[in-house]
Length: 254
Image (cartoon, rainbow, N blue to C red; front, side, top):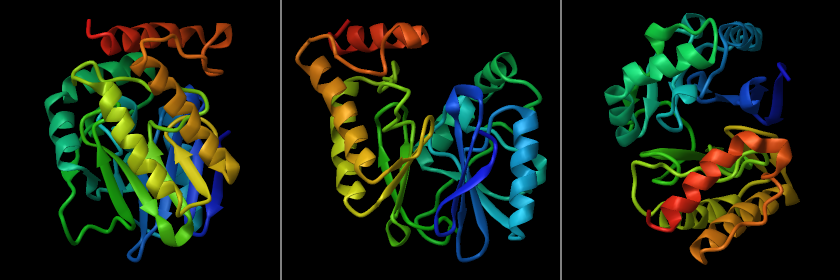
């Protein structure tokens, strides 16, 4: 953990110790775009050091979805626009104080004043390369970025090897939202060899299809009203029991 690792041409990933969170750096036409930087202040400093060593200016940030651990920033990354889908930017603005409180409770050394300062992604003109794939699974305005020319799909909190699908309790029919999102990500994944999740290991080659299959199997079980058989659940991941039970209750319409 800790290094800025190149996973494709112009795409680097740095993993935090906090829930295996991945910060992603993408080289665009005008400079670097930093996606979901985190988590603790010391790690943000190390990320800034690594970005400095690339010798390319940061021209923008991007937030895949409006959960506190994806809303962070550091002054050393620059006073640049930090984009998100319009829906995600709206939710982040409305929940900014809560995100700051959660960050203060869960991590250390984070510049709280920089949390959730997002700019709605314009239809044209933003220096974010690739295709934005927006869906409603896991969070309002959740976005993936397809970099088809580099064979990379950046998926936020989807397709993780350590996290089960996690439902947004504020939205109805997350089972349906996940089914639709997985269909879209499956289509996008046909153009890539690398998938970068928000948490966990980067998937390469046949691992990509395996991640999609694991999330589909989990969602399919909930659709049938059954208990999923999932390697991500178990005594090694007791902390997932509570969100898993919440998923079950939402799927059953409680």
